[in-house]
Amino acid sequence: MSTANRWLTMLVVLLALGAGLGAALTWRTHGDRADAATRQERYGAVLASANAEVTAFVNMRYDRAARSVGAVASGATGDFRDHYVRSAPHVIRVLERNRSAMRGQVVWSAVTAVAPTRATVIAATTGTVSNRRTKGAQQPREFRLRVTLVHEGGRWLTADIQFVGDRP
Amino acid sequence: MTRRASVVLGTCALILATVVGAEIWYLWGTSAPSASTRRPVVVGDIEAQTAVDTAATDAAAIFTASWRRYDAHLARVTSLMTADMAARYRTTAAPVRSRVVSSRTTTVTRVAASGVVRATPGEVLALLFLDQRTSARGVPPSYAARRALVTMVHTDRGWLVDNVQTR
Image (tube, rainbow over all chains, first blue to last red; front, side, top):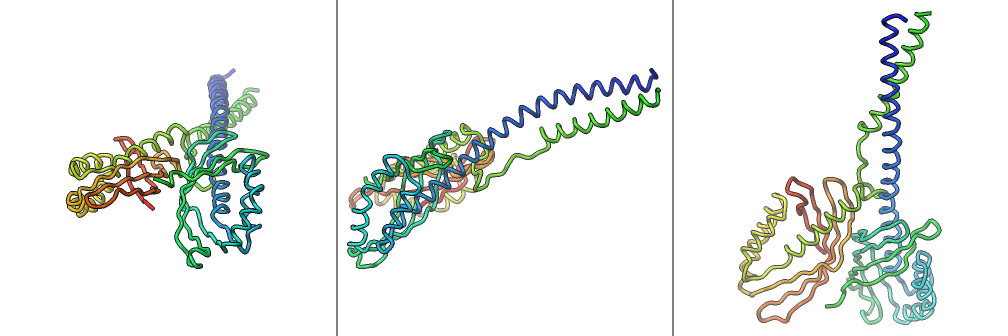
């Protein structure tokens, strides 16, 4: 074997060792990054579901009462959904009797806690409400909500919505 | 034979060098993801929670003030802020001072809930629900349920308040 080939052989051996070490590091890093991406995308998915549910929750119209209630129910699950669906006829009657219309939107929302199957989000909303009592005039309504979500069937669904400290 | 071996060895070296280069690029050449709607939090849970907890503690301190120690309050809370935020805060606090002292106003703020809106290694947006109770001479005590979006930035002094929006 010539001297040049001896050097080339050494270089190939060194590069092979480097490539092997690099492959191990790359494999581990790829796994870590995939885990991080899954965790980070969970935040986005949780916020998107919570925002959609809260938006449905703060948009109720007497002339589209059944559709308004259905929009909330479609993103809900468990006892919260059962209770909501059970009380829907009463809610619809109240909305229609009072000619109530609530319009709103999510101003800010944030993740309080998140795990693979359960999450808590807080949401601040702004909007207006009008009914017979306001004589049809729109009055401002702002809410602070805490939303509990669970991961079921590949979707984040709302298991509970609570008002946060809305009274002194 | 020697020439053929040289070609084979040279080709192997070239392929392996390309593989090592690609591995180095993957490990150190790619930048960290930026925050987006799909991935609003691109830091670890503990890091984000630390910034949110700091935002909650600092906001409670900033919005809790007594007419008795207003100057001390101002000095203390501006140390929790970036230089820009501290300058803005001093500007808005100066005209408020005389009103607070003359009406003997005391405001106590408690954080009812907190969460992370968006987080990168250098900046975290925290949403806070603040319960504010205010007492002043001649008026009944009042309560306000506020919402605050606090921007925290990471500096060599740790997480500092860079902006506060309330609604």
